[in-house]
Length: 188
Image 1 (tube, rainbow, N blue to C red):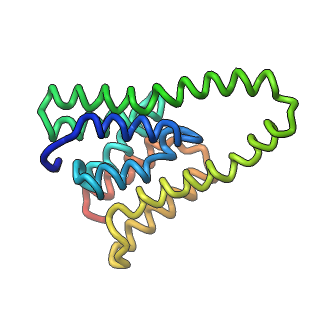
Image 2 (tube, helix red, strand yellow):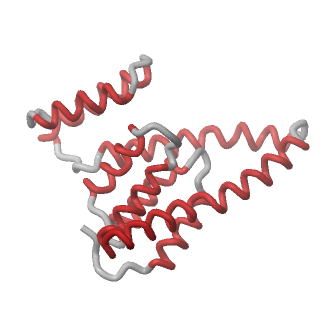
């Protein structure tokens, strides 16, 4: 459920800012998107947020599509179909424009100076940061239902899914389908 009074400029500005922090891809900014859209502004609920990310990640195409879906859902709650279109365009433009421009310029410069020690050190130093951001994103998605021990089946499915994705080449759509069936029957 979207709270009243959507400030489109602040919405766009937040995605512009997140774009410059999206080291490792837009998905690494999902924890802050959650904080801003769900906790701070109340424009999305936890289930809306996690569903948007899960659906977009399961769909073919670039994984940045989850940002478009988040914008769509925020805009739909604020202004119907027109708001949804505006939310989609503003969120996607906001997350893509700064990082795309910066990446192009930095990659061109880095390629020309790839033998410099500072450039190699920077690349190696960014790896742990990207991994930490991905783990934080996974944690946000896994704990969207709360931290209650009574939800142990959900924790078990999350753990099993993590291990299957890590150790096998089973396509994620199969796991999402199995999760949907378990949810359909009320097992998780």
